[in-house]
Length: 194
Ligand code: AMP
Image (cartoon, rainbow, N blue to C red):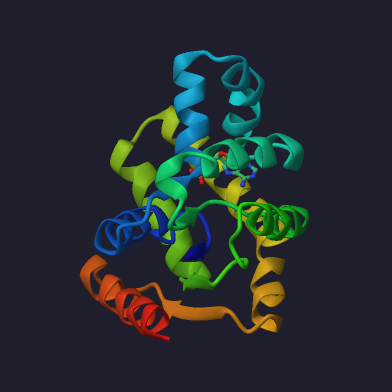
């Protein structure tokens, strides 16, 4: 079963994807985590993407396809995966369909769109920078705003793309972590039964 998480940066995808992955026995594949690990380890990939990630821009689709293809080839992905942060552009979504077909999956089964209103996202971003409270925090807030702009430009079109395919489920992302989790779990449980 292939599940994709969609949502703006700060919507809580990573936290929720990890909990659902544990419950449903699927690996959580977070491309952001994988790229950060590559940067920390100083691999050639890490060196290539470091600057791009710092700026809040997206890594190119070709590189991302390789990263995801390698990860999905690992044995723990045989039953499927919960994708956190991929696909993030329309070309990535197309590539992902091809890739899923090649590894014997019928395609993306379910897309969970974690919907958090813009003003809530902005207040989460500025709250974080106030908590840290330094010049660096202002830079971070600036990058966070850039990431939000990139999300609207390049990732938000995927909502319509998956809605047209009738696999999108919209889940309200406001409220406590537990209440958001309960909503997501209910949707997933229903999809697993179907
Ligand atoms: P995340 O932790 O998912 O917000 O990802 C952190 C950063 O990694 C992003 O701002 C991008 O620079 C890069 N990244 C992660 N996933 C992708 C992707 N699917 N396509 C392009 N860049 C990505």
